[in-house]
Each structure stands twice: as C-alpha cells, then as structure tokens.
Amino acid sequence: MKKSDTGVNKTLIGLLRRATAVINEETQLLIDAPNADVSGIVARKNRYLFELSIAMEDTKIGPDDDKVLSALKNLKEAADRNERRLAAQIDAAREIVGILGNLAQANAKDGTYAAHRSF
Image (cartoon, rainbow, N blue to C red; front, top):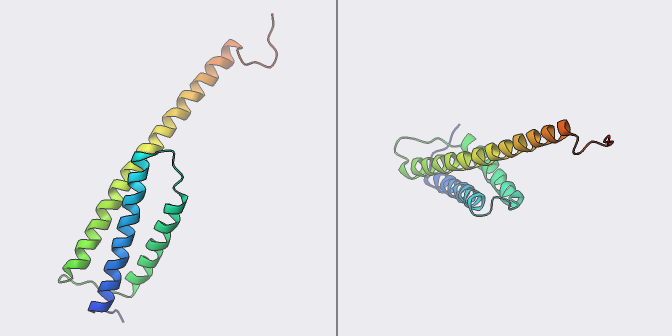
C-alpha cells in the first residue's frame, strides 16, 4: 500500500531538494572547472538518487501535492541542465580525440614518429 501524508511528503521534498542541489553543484563545477575531480559529488548524487528511488516506491503523489510536484519539476530541470553540460564535455572530448587521431595518422604517414627512419 502506498503512503500519502505530510510526513512522507516532507521527507520526499527534502530528498528531492538535496538531489537537486548536488546536481546543480556538479553542473556548476563542470562549468567553472571542467577538469575538476567530481567523484565526490557523483558519489553523493548517486546516493541521493538511490534514496529518492526507494522513497518514491513507497509514496503516492497526488495532483494536490504542489510542493512535491514543484520539487520534482526543479529536479528535472536541474537534471536536464546537467545532462546538457555533460554532453557538451563528452562532445568536446570526442572532438579532441579525433583531432589527436588525425594528427597521429598524418605524422605516421610522413615518418616523423616512425621507429626506424631511412636517411
């Protein structure tokens, strides 16, 4: 049986807000310091999202749960921004790998980095 009461919703709202905050923190760090180590943030994000998934299994959200629905909307918006930032970084990394691959192929063809060059 699913629960729907103020105490459960307050817990759910707290989890939603924490998950949103850590996702926003990760997104901002990716903007401010793209080379930063985000492993700690990712671990917290994973933990909050895991806790949230467990809490959602035992909760019924109705159309009158404005605060929960608003917190869910905020989480979705934060996740969408985070996804766009991560996708941009992945695309940039792919582009760099492609450039380096092209340079390596070009240099291999002209013998610049060959193990044994003929003179």
